[in-house]
Image 1 (cartoon, one colour):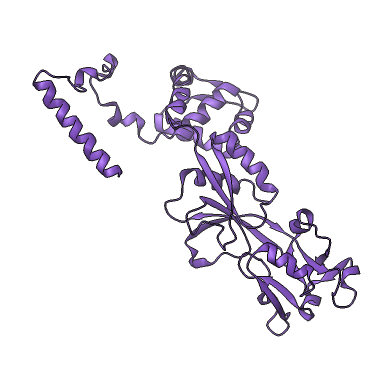
Image 2: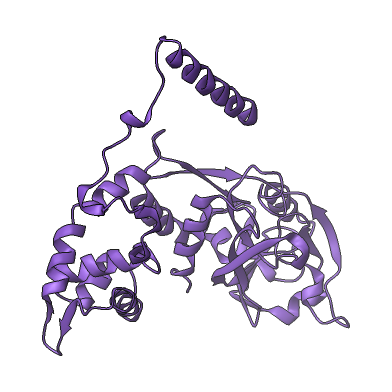
Length: 335
């Protein structure tokens, strides 16, 4: 469709040129283009070597320091580390071949060259930011998850919205990759191990403790009255496993001492009801106990249990630009 439209646009442009030559309604001409800057000496500014090596982050860093007169305050404003900001400003000075800032242990001041650059640059970056915003309005990021979205993602989503102006649409999918494999999600939150052949880039966001989900009726022994269970004790108990999005399977225990598989479920809700019905004991992230209480289930703290890794994941290739931004921001929230 786009290719056909491009071809049609080309055809329309050719027709306009022909009409103009015949005295009809003229299309865009060189006279309609902005007049060249008289100070440019007719040099193509796109090929100007002064732009080589200059990155937008260098300019943003310089402007922030110039306005704050402090690398510490400027780094806080840009939500970056002070060493990163220092390297960006130094890279700009190296590229331009001039010192822009005078630094001492007590103050930061602009040099004459720095003042000239700031005066010329300060009004340009807001215009550039406005030009780069989508003319169709804010974008939408589809954030996929399975049964629970970690509480840590609330802050992450808030900061992402503030940084990009984009909206975030939550997508729950009971699939191993939370809709990423079907194109329903742009970036996802996954618990447990991610297959190496899934074609994804991942970043560890946090690790959650595990708890045991014990049926109040029908549990072996006095499990429903215990305050703490040891991970090794579960090897002697029947286990209910969510085989699609669950994080706990018999393979987590040593090969010679693993729990018996009581039954399986295809999603979180089935898993929860199977445990409540007394088919066996379940194991889940601690957040399940906090956000999914059940009258027929008691959650018991586990000791010596391996934590549940929680990761952000996106396609290794051709990821959505907003997903890249979210992924990068998530790396700064690792804990």
